[in-house]
Picture 1 (cartoon, rainbow, N blue to C red):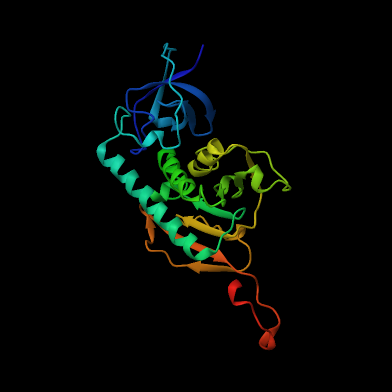
Picture 2: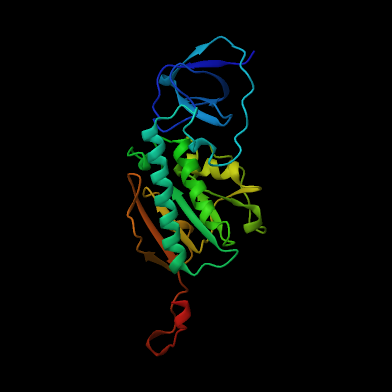
Length: 266
């Protein structure tokens, strides 16, 4: 018999996957609660004080989401117009930031863009305290939309629980040493979880040397950037309520005062 829970409290105002009163099937458990299957069939982490256990109730099959943006449609999805509009604003802000960075970073097909993202900070909560799958999907979708015709890979940085490991397409790093971990919204972060669920062949790495980076919510991506990182000034300084920074990289200068340098590599 499947374990079921009834939602009695909703902390994530942006989520369209559950509402107070919903009875949902438990997919797995974690130290702070359970992971349930939401309205579109995707896993959602619920804190202990958000639900109560109930007896099994037969439910109709839920349709699989058709795209990464599935959850952004307000009609019939249990999300307020205000929350939907906010997600649209976040998406536009992210796409603008990626455009700004691509314009100056000189990235080429096969390069990697490392992205750290705290969905908690985007929602104006303390980092690590309010992981939102909806915000994670929104931001990942916006970045991948901007990168899809560039040949540049997105490298999603997990949270501190997973030592800021990287989730990336296997084709980007075929010779790398992989590690075994599957990120979850509250053990890896919603952004990295979305990346893992979206990539065709996701793999996890302990580290990468990326060619550019975006940090949403002060997650500290510097450990995954090539030397030397150069700050990039963006048009906007926030995504939602989160502080955002970006960087490109350049080769190290060597040789001292008599050396000459290639201006195209600066």
